[in-house]
Length: 356
Image (cartoon, rainbow, N blue to C red; front, side):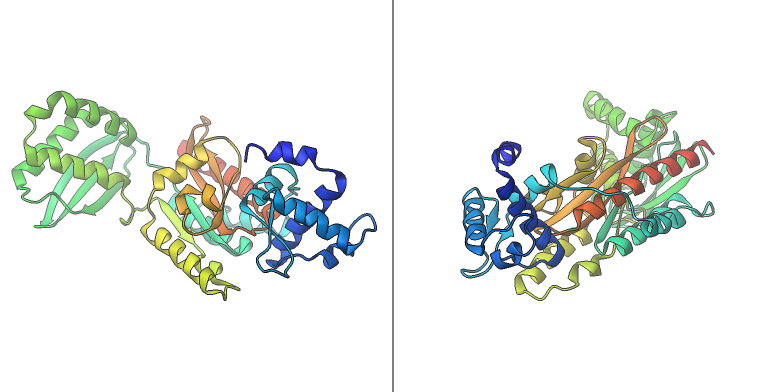
């Protein structure tokens, strides 16, 4: 990938135009683009044989590939990366798309989770892909923590925040827990939690446990660790990652390998795993980022592309992210500004609600 700009700069105008038109044709149709098709759209009059020679050169550079012996060419992952970095023309958000996004964020009666769910549904609808929305953590100081046993293998943690917000999470406690070990764990946490947010508390507990490991009963220690994992774990009722529009990824897919790729993606989304990695992708830099195929470590088995952007609070701190995932032949020029616009609006809205 690091050689992409160098390769692009060393291309002559004809090679650059052939490359651009092959990629744009593939992104529009999903089909290989042949030399005869290109001769009809080239800015200069050239023969099909000349275009074929240029395409062979581009294939030798690893930018194009031939899916079949006599077929046209499609871009490789390297080719798509180079196109996105050097030739992609990103337009403004279409007025119709902007109106739909604005309408989603216009209601003040929804809580943040409901709002972000609607954002995800809207993103999925207008991009025809699957949308991913990572909701912000609740960062108010904690007032009280309590563990409640529901059964031998089920327990409830109750988190009461200073702003009145209450979260209840069901989790599986470590084997052999007792009422006293649960009380000890809760007392240990409450002694540390006053005035701290959940993120602050996690950091404090890691340090405190290393100092007081010998003082904490083994079962209580395990329970605390289970509680810590609970607040970050996927699959609970208050899951932070919201996924909408998975069925869109099946549209137009008939090849067996496409179904297998999408099934792999569905498995990833169902487990909603590696949520921290999703935010890490967005936190690597401000603005929209594009991950193509195997570059996308969150869904590396799916052969898909992810367009993701972080959103920030009033202090310019990244608190969540929004994204769209779909086939590598996404309409990047249209989807990039949509994701960017949505992320900025969500950040503003979440910040405004935090002031209330």
